[in-house]
Length: 329
Image (spheres, one colour):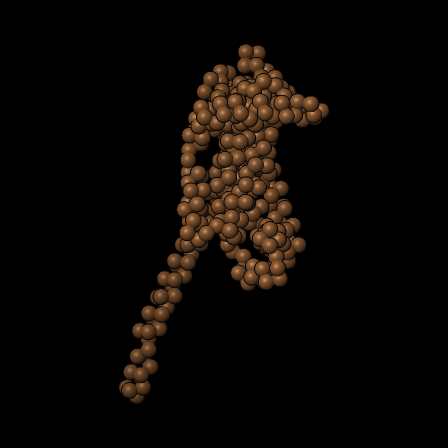
């Protein structure tokens, strides 16, 4: 009997140790779950706080101007008469110019690095492109004002004016004296700033294409252009669109670099060579000088409009990605 009792009592320490281990693992898992959930909740709280702050700060301007604030070109701090249309127009135009330049160039760089570049040069060129993303925006602005804008004024804008001077529509788009600064120059600077994001993300997603797909395409006689068009881009289109939208978000919200080179004129001009302004540039230039509740509230409402524009752009991008994923499935 004593031997049986000893045998039955022997496994108990092992059972107890296993129970303690399972309890410890369960506790750690519960703590990890709570910490991650708290992080997600904090993000939502911060986002909600930003929205509430923008709406609350915009209420005086909303009451004073109503929906007409979105369509008015007025901007007169002396009479407290403000409108957002020139800033909205400049924000959209400069961002579109930037994406028209940066997207094909960025995808071309990614294609060269993944398919055509010698292996010894891929890493140095890739690092050089990524370093562009680390340059502060104010450096881009200073370079744009003192180096790029004079170059554009001397060599680019006069050529565009003379080239399209007799074309009915393009003569208005590229009209006016060559100031050097303006929406076209700001679009070029933004294109340089968002180029590293598009090129780096496109390169990374291009490298995820299975080699067997590329080898099969090359085996049936595809050229590099056909390989990229019919194999690589369809396989990686979700990632490429994500990189493009990330660059667009950066272009919409860029402040200092655009402030230096856009001219900061609160007016709408059909010419891309004319000075203009953006929402971010207007806030950066005038927020410290805003006197009075209406003036400050108008600037905060501009920030709210920029937030809404960015949210709409991201929502459209998400919807496009969902449709692509459904078609792929």
